[in-house]
Image (cartoon, rainbow, N blue to C red; front, side, top):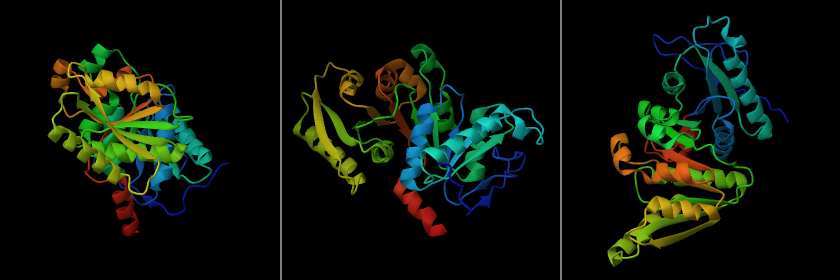
Length: 319
């Protein structure tokens, strides 16, 4: 059923030199609930289904508002509400409120920018959004290594957390989520992202650390510590297992994870730490899994260093 947006709203003040367009739902300005909204760029009609589903799950789990963003370049302010971009953003906001039975507040906005990445960067600044959920549709591997995706461009241009889905499969009916952890800077937020998905689908989480079959005892101790830290991050969430997988030294970790993906409904991983040039030369475990696994893969970039629980509590404390 349809639900009304929250009545507790505040206006967004655009940065100097950036013109704000009317909201897609017919309002004037950007009426958003206080806090840190989740921004969902509308890439196109065919490649936002995963991002939409995940964003609704995250908003429901964290109590934050969804903002669907589309662009309407080279339009006058009076024409913007009638553009396809305005209609698509508004339609997604209405659908988010409906599929969540009113538990999620959502708004559609449109910006007069030629570049969606630039529109997102400005919206992150103007709206105080600290999480962006975007779908990176499957592309040719060579092209993906040479040219950054929309999600990668957003992650490099903003200090927001960026959640990218790979456009394969569906989150409907997810019952098991694999979370490979390695203790990197994005691993913690990947655990948060997995929890949000598992909470929405009543799924089980498996935390996995891959170690070499010839690993030393110190390496195994480090593996146990990484898994313990990830498990602690889940706090009271009780549908979780932790395990280490020994792989032959000659086996690529990405290949090992792709094989394991056959036994799970979804994978959530931290973003790669290598720069694009190094990834082109030597490859990236995260990108290889995202491209080769035949299940939904969520890749998370931690842009703020705070868990979603911490930022939700902070926003509540500011009310």
